[in-house]
Length: 78
Image (tube, rainbow, N blue to C red; front, side, top):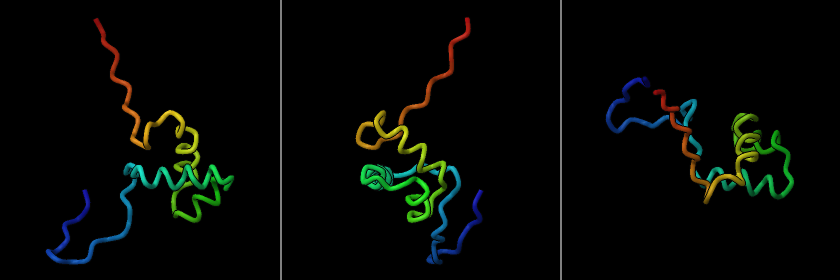
């Protein structure tokens, strides 16, 4: 859990690990990939992990309007 900050103190600009990308960020990645930029170039320019950019471009067609895909539910056991 992140440490508490004092009221009216500065907010850290660091992203939390494992946080979801916004639909806007996904759109930026998809646009750069559509313009034939390499995933490593996109990752370096946007300060993201290579695997995040690669997976986002691979799953871009499955997403509707950049919204996160629902997770598969747990299988029922009888």
